[in-house]
Length: 460
Ligand code: BG6
Image (cartoon, rainbow, N blue to C red; front, top):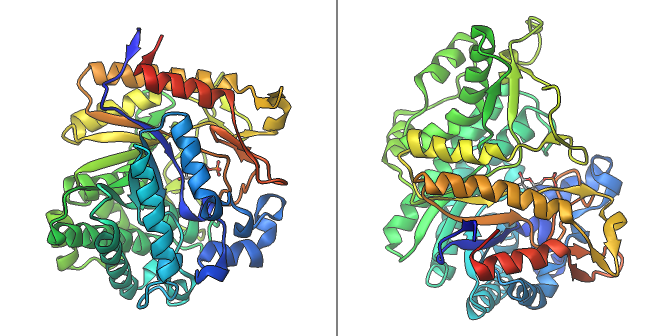
């Protein structure tokens, strides 16, 4: 076999509470920002689909977990919904949520599927957002309490914990680029949110260590590898700045225990530095994770800026670089992003050389396709493009592992087509197709291919 992976390798998929469970407010769930935004700003969501219609995991979870087993997953990541577990954000725990998550975890374990549990996938309880969300330090405390509650309730069985999915996104999309609620456009506020998310991560890791549970804790990051247009110093500078703002800012804080000096210098120069206390710096320096998840979808190609930014405009990382549209780049036109399988190898090498070769896994990778029903033949989506995508990425991952990268697993986004933040059900990513009218979930050709891959520990 040409591409053999270790027998212990984690194979499976990732999802998240808000995207999969369905809203089910009736069972004591409190509202989160997505329940609210998808109703109040409904026009921002593809075909107006709200969180109420997400993939019904809350009702179908036994059957869904059986479907995971049917394609031989040995692991699966989802998140706990903070607003389901603690409807008011702090205080009383919802007993129905405890029963649901307990049964979900027990069922996964009974079927040989290791639960990877994430605590926060973009879904701030609305009551806490009304207090300022992560802009408010009180919410760090609330998150700490929520994280501790999860560890105490489920930590006897869950051995792989993650504090956040893509910590940059709630800050960048919610406070700078107008994609996520609360749709604020203000760099300094975004930087404050990011800093507080990093502190919340540190507090959760600290609580986990204090409980002395037997398991690992880490974080899921979206590391977008940056490629300059050319070796011209102006292009190299653009790449350095894109990397500094979007990757090193979080990576260095989490993996090296400190923010990059250069970032601080730039933010002081532009008067954009958020409040960072000495105690924050000490906490960041003292926090170490056990396992890193990397979500990889696309590369970031940049070039030197062509126009001087509007000095009265909103400060942003884009003041330092322009996107580079590389001739001949291969696009996923549904999502408008480039497909570049070698990026996964480059990330692995970066982790190996710059971040101490820490244990990591691919926590998301996938291809979202619009209008996938066009590929249905004899009742099954014939998604050969997804199989090709998987093979191409896995070949590069295999190469990195052969060169010493400590990659422990690969999770595809996602198990069954799910709702997403704005795109709703436009782009389909699942190994199973979801029929939105009937709720029926049927395996795609890629799901069967993945099953064979897992069972054979590799592919040709
Ligand atoms: C990832 C997120 O970055 O992208 C997921 O962690 C999301 O939550 C996925 O669903 C795909 O995004 P989209 O908008 O293309 O469906």
